Length: 263
Image 1 (cartoon, helix red, strand yellow):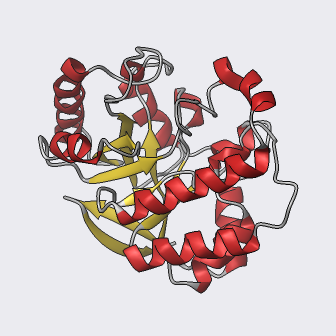
Image 2 (tube, one colour; image 1 turned 180 degrees about the vertical axis):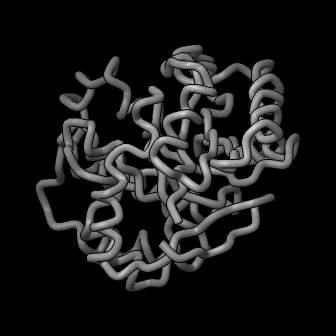
Image 3 (tube, one colour; image 1 turned 30 degrees about the horizontal axis):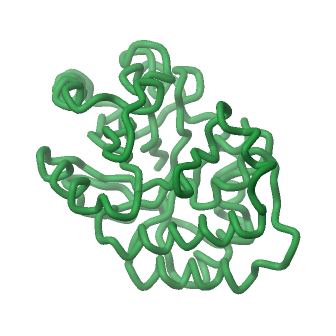
């Protein structure tokens, strides 16, 4: 059973296309479920090019509800992608309680004030020690897992996006991170958008995904689509990776309850 739980909308300010267009592509690619998963308002900054605004959240939810009533195949799910930023956990928790989401993705897009995956701030890699950036990024991933805010952790090695890699061995760092995720019983997203980025690799890497399988971490699928044609993109490659690692099931969600289904 194929699902794509990571589909954005134009409300986030950096995606395009009508929501119906995304659903049409999902149907063409025979997805059983498709979840809109747009960027929740951030509390540590206001940037209309990154997330929807607070007043747009109700608009987003209403639009998804309307589409849920209209479409039966694929089934439409209401998700939200919320940034994890230390110090704002209570604000995020309050926001998430406003609506009955099917699932909540947690993402790390900021190391301190640095939006490390934003092309507008790409030059700042020259001002940061890459090894330290990896340490700080994975520390934030562990914090996000322990926060209890999220059902799924998204692109858990996003720090590789622009093809910057650590200069030293990080095996213990990765194992510690996956162990924390397993202890928190949080799902991990297998996100194909990395294949469309300079790193040219699915998030997470096969190395990390093997650790996830070893520690019993459940996974789900996401394309991170910001354009309709990206829905379900490269899922064939994701399925091959999952099966090679040993996964035979993926997580689905309804009302923030997880259910495992066969691939």
